[in-house]
Image 1 (spheres, rainbow, N blue to C red):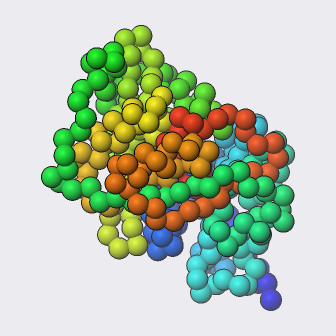
Image 2 (image 1 turned 135 degrees about the vertical axis):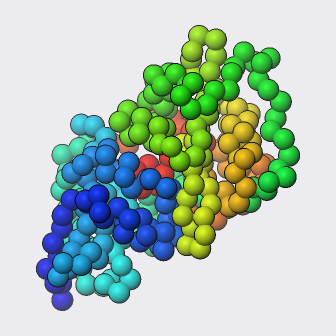
Image 3 (image 1 turned 90 degrees about the horizontal axis):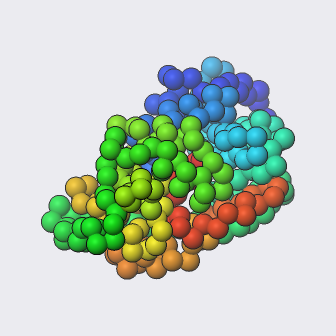
Length: 294
């Protein structure tokens, strides 16, 4: 029997609760992630309440008039099997229903369910794990010979990174990316040439594991596997501990690079789309920002 679920936009005071749920579920949320999701689309994150108590959440974020993404979808274990997930799902889908394309990452056991709602599989997304040590070998040699500079934080020309990202991701995401790269947790690096053009960038941020804390790299975009590997080496250099990265199956070089760098496969999801699938090749995307918003 389905009980009445009151679905409300996520409030600031809900952020800690939802982050905790995601941590316990094994999502490994990054520090500050949920607040950025909320800021990307204030009407696109919801919490379901039962008799005043929060019991589930979902994100259905509109990036623009052409593309949206569903994620952060969960119901607390003790309330599963009562129809609350379906109510949250319908609510998120109705928010995005007029968009030409909606994406999501499906757990293996949910692919068939999403298929019944019109979502079609696109590619496998692989989560990789490595252990970074404080005595990790020094990163690769500097890039002067290639004419590229490695810049960090505020020294990075923001518009160059935005333009680089917009040409390689399924949809431009200027508001999300600006918040994501400006967040004080973690480190952002970019490879910039003498004309202020970007040739790769990445971010590492602290994440909350089911037990303890680790690090997640994402997004990670680069012209080549060699440049992506250089960014990873630099990003992980001062961040010992568990390190996670999610690679898109549409980039066949990404998995080979992770294995070469000592990462091991941990889990996988399936990228699925409803509507017209994005035509942008992902061969220069080596790490996703997050599974919750793509």
